[in-house]
Image (cartoon, rainbow over the protein chains, first blue to last red):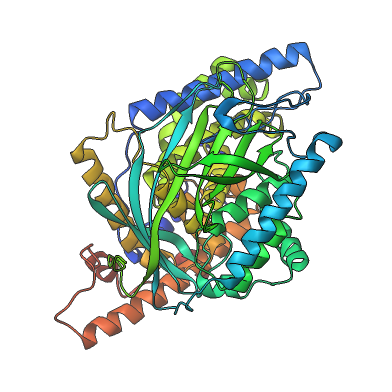
Length: 345
Length: 213
């Protein structure tokens, strides 16, 4: 038997076994120190969380510790209060995730109408099937904000990037390449990754149900929720991540129709993407954080332009209207090889 | 190991968490990198691991053993979640410029890329194992936990650790043999630059003692 819980050097027999592994595998990279800036940043987060929880605990012994923050998306619990929003960013919100029945009814209707038009346009779009040996190319510009525990955030400078996503449905290890700041890098998935919600390929998307109700049910089943996040919000955001992908017209139409069935979805008259393009917005507010996730569509063509996240309410040092992330799809297409760019039309 | 650290952690002592962080941030960070293959993901996993440790302190077993298995166990789960969906990460990359270059000098960045490349070579082989086998292997072989500690980290019996490692070993041996046979067929070219010699130097393998016990 092995020594249990000794904490000291492990038994020799185990060492021998592990050395054998060293012979069976190429060597792993040498260990590194945590770079000092992130080291301090994460230490601060930890200490801040401890202090907050300790303070909360003193105020309210029943308060459960919850997720505080995630990059780009603060998960700070806010007291459930009425939501009255207007003005900032020239958007008009009248409801946060269906928090109040009457106020949301009307915008929800208009959101439904817009989503219906989006579905109609998508259904008529001309999309050529994508083969598994091809790649979806996406060029985009975007920025994210790093958040302080007190809610203050600062949007990083915008950066352009290009990605090539493999369309193989089977489990693959190298799933894509990207080009950013003058250099290419590979995306690997440890243990391999089959096509799926996290790696949606054309063929995988094409296999999704086209009945909006069935599709929505399937998306609810597949979507994983972060600590304490409302499922409807997670599903909404998940769908948003699929919108920039290439899929058959009927699947795209079904996605928009499915969104129309999610409660709390609103329509914005003026929304702006990371490239400064204005259009209609479809948004939903995360009730935990009062952060809106908004998709932007061209007013005329109804093409998907991009996405944005912003505060709909002040939070300590964070102000209503603070943009936490923004994204604009600049160009996409299908190519036959990594690092190949679609011809400019 | 700091005296009584585990008890102080269980009691929610602020300073104890500061010590825990100072002592283990590095090993958590490196473990997360070996599981995810991405230094920036590893950094997030590391940060979140300590937040989870704080939140889950009440579930920590009493005793006086090192807290490394506990943290690596949390980190293993975090890494598993962080890896879900490269599309998500690609999308994320696409909408985010490179991280703040405060300390990311060119040299450092190049080092990171080399690491990722080197790890990719490891993964070509390691990636053929089942996830559960990969995780136990990473804990025992790369992070240096003993079997009992790996069992503690994963919340599984010691016997399971042993059998997973044994299965992993059998599989890796087979792969190495296959590779050897392939290389003999096409001798002039060696695939990949990373020393695969190491894998062959150890051949032929002795039957592992424990199995013949």
